[in-house]
Amino acid sequence: MVILDTSIWIEFFRFDTRLDLKTIVNLEDIHICPPIYMEVLQGIRDEKAFQKVKTYFKQFKMVESPLSEELIEEAIHIFRLCKRSGLPVRNSVDCIISACAKKHNLSILHIDRDYKYISQIFPIKEKSIK
Image (cartoon, rainbow, N blue to C red):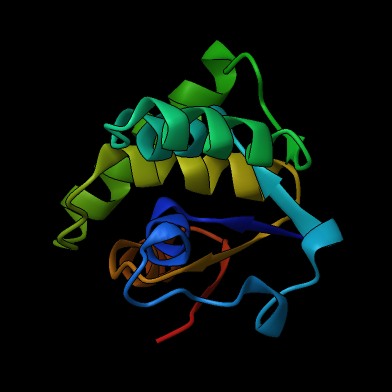
């Protein structure tokens, strides 16, 4: 069971690279959470593509919708731990995604160095595909 980070979805939907998800994960194991849904969809300019991706995401289980105050507090804790430890986490949304993954015992597949840093101080399962 996995959460695919926004970085994976961007790579998947790009026309020039066309990542094949089936080679890295069983599609039935994919989960998404509101921050990933938002980050991916907000970056799509073309309305037809926007609707297509929105429909595509409906096949995956959405976790933590709506986001709870408890989960946000956990994400704040993660971000502050990283900063105190001198780890250069660039995106607080990655802390929310990490909190979602931990709560639901999901691994995070990504192409984003923040998760390597987060995993040094917070118990998440993460794997970069590159």
